[in-house]
Image 1: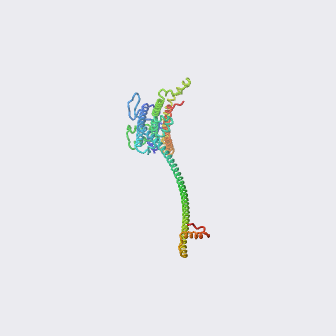
Image 2: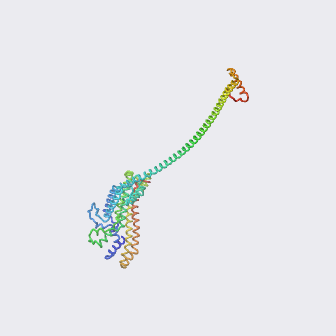
Image 3: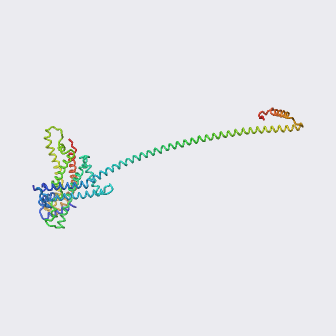
Length: 310
Length: 173
């Protein structure tokens, strides 16, 4: 089981250095250190474009999503029958759920075809990015490296092990996704009402002018608060679950240090692993819910720009 | 800030946007677009098929009703034809019977009359023969021939004598 492998790896690490739970946890949920990226790239306009672990994860996810989804869709379109089979059933359920359950009720029938691709991509991309954090791919690689491969200290494998795998736990990533929502809101409003009318729609028309002094700052603030809330909700949820799992697993090593190996293994078997399994199960729900919430709220915000109700 | 959890990383921010937009463009072009179109057309096809099926059911129902109606009128018509022909046959039979009866009666009447006529003629002849015989016998007896006038007179007398006593039905010859 994945969690147990995780524990074993940690056990091995803990053997020859003093265990620091906070450092280990942070190391596992944050990006690889910016000073040591996987690939160094030159700075452009003072921005470091080096490829860190989370950039790599994003690319892996995007590539996987694209290949799998396109392959499934192409295979479905190639066949003569209209009846979906295999993985297409699941994909179709997702597509129809997003289109009929999220996009259409919010943006309306007229714009549903325009915005479904964006919302669908949000959903699939965020769901996969969330989910990969639950699968200890790199922990398995680390285990292999330690006991089988024995690569050197500066090898690519060692570098790959640094940093967490959940890109959506990094608020830079979620902020970028929320920025796309922010842009989509403006594009949606402008396409539905024209560029200037969209900005006028921010506040209800026909109020007494002193109210506008109050309302305009609030609405402008609200414009930025919406994506900010999206950013923080997703990142914090993704970090939270992982920290909880790792903190519970840390008991193993804390007890091992304090009372010897036997106590550590005992606590691991009786408390940590069952609890971590439970929280992992909860995390499966959380990754679905967070992907759904981000997608749904993006659709709601886009819909609010299109169907202005005052 | 030293905490890597809240490290600002503009490079990652921009990479995310680029990655996402590229993925969005590719998926929209190669996956979502064709898929949504296919789903839409399939939905329309299913809706149309259901409509067609319903229409066909209604049509079938209508045709069924129609055939039932046709059957019912055919049955009624057949019944009326049968009863009509039965009554026609009845009346024809009655007519034929009556005609036969009438013809029979006429034949009987004819025969009766014929018989009467024949009887009358036979009687007449017998009478003439008798007259001739008696004349011949009488002349033999008398020994001479009566003259023609005597003859006629004698016959008339004799006839009157025959006619007069109680045989009124004798035809006159």
